[in-house]
Length: 319
Image 1 (tube, rainbow, N blue to C red):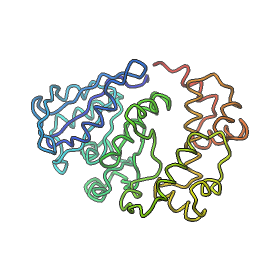
Image 2 (tube, rainbow, N blue to C red):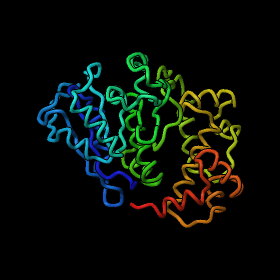
Image 3 (cartoon, rainbow, N blue to C red):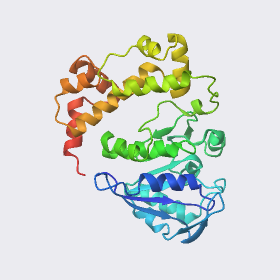
């Protein structure tokens, strides 16, 4: 199937304003150079819908738009403990049966579970409500630590701002890293966050200037991927011991320095494969791998296909 073009987000009563802002911003206009989407906010009965902060939203579209869209997103709402009305559940099932991608984040995941779309699948939600989701829907395998889980036609995300992670993942999956990165830059967001929800449960308050130095080192690393970067060198730049650097790095990013660098290198390689005609050997050099063979090994291991196949997919797929 071609990448999604029409996007419909279901807004229940008490819908989270942050969630509305996320989908409206990600799938709203970003200029002629970036993909445009036919985006609609939908609800059970078109008209005023109360948001979680008490501000009324004017929603013009009903659930018929859910059944027609290429991408359907169930937004979180304050009344998530009560299943949506039957017409909403029917629209979600119809969209999925037709081949649409159906997604939700935070407690919006409960709507997908109520529609039976998560049965025999893995899913995530806000960590605070993971146990409740698992208890109510025992056919669902709930993974409380994930930022998002991609099950192909069903994608679920964690709480609050993890909606950005889910939406950017969908863009990256359907339109490629270059487009997702461009939209993330437009919103001044990281294109991808490593780690899971666990890193956000208790974040210590910075005690000194080490965190500023760490941020500077991370920025330097992003701009110099072509250079060999050992943990010892990064720690030296941060004026920290290797052990302290690794501990602070994991606390700040939710992953290890090696995994973070690997992700950056592969993401940059994806972007170069999509947007340039550079030889694989040159791409390997620019992202810090010693040879095309090393890049290929990492790409196959982490992305499931060799670089040439990845490039071909994004140069022949319809847009």
